[in-house]
Image 1 (cartoon, helix red, strand yellow):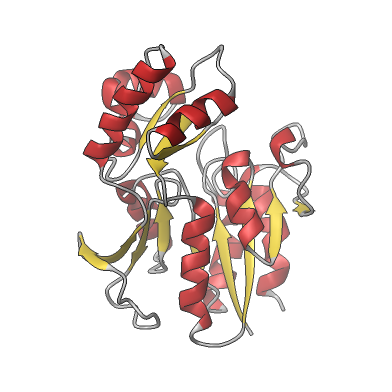
Image 2: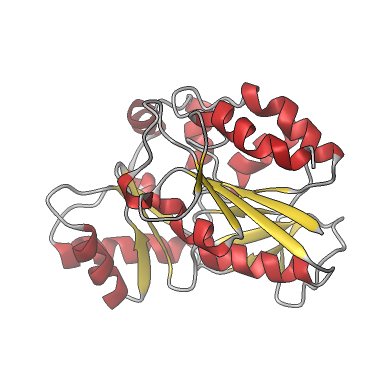
Length: 267
C-alpha cells in the first residue's frame, strides 16, 4: 500500500511565527527513507516552493497558488501526463488561468464590490514585508505569481458576498482572515489533490494523508483518507475546520506536524 502525504505549508509544516520547520526535519528524513512522498499544497508560488524543496532535496510533485497548478519533476516517470504542458522545466497540470487574467479579474471584482482591493501586484516588497513579516527576498518570491492573485481581505464584506461576486465574474475567491486568493474557476486545493491522487492510483492501492490549519485547506482535507488539523499556538483549531472529522495534532506548527505524521514513517 503506497502512502502519500499532502501538506499545507504556512502554519502547518512551517511555523506561523518564523516560517521554519526545524522540528520536522527528522520526520521528513524518515519519510524520505521510506519513499513516502511529501506533496506541498500551498498558496505559495512555484519559486517559493522550489526553494523549500531544494533545502529538503525532494523531487516530489507540488501544488501551488491554491490549487492553480500541479508541478511534476521531469525525471518523475510514474504518471500519465497527457493532460500536462511543459512549464519552466516541469510538466504542469494547469487548473487556473494566467496571472494577467487574475489581475484583470481582481480589478473587475473591485469595481463590482465597490471597494478598492489591494492585490500583491499593487504592493511593494516593503509593503508585503511589513504586512507578513517575510524577509524582503521571501516577499519578492511571494510576488512571482503565475496563475492567481492574493489580495488583502476587505473588511465590512462577508465571505459570501465576495464569493458570489467572484462567481458572477467566472472566477473563485478563497476568502482568508488576512489575505484572500482569486483563482480560476476550475482551480482549488481539492481539485488539484484529487487529480494527483488519480495519477498515483495508476500504480496501485493508495492511502492519502493531508495536513492543514485553516479553511483554505478544507477542500484538501476533504479529499484525503486521513485528514489532520494543526492547531494554532494556543492549541485551538480554526473555527472553519471545527466541523471536520479529523485527527488533531498535539502541537502547533512543525512540532505538531512531526508528532502527527511520524507514526506513518515507522509503520
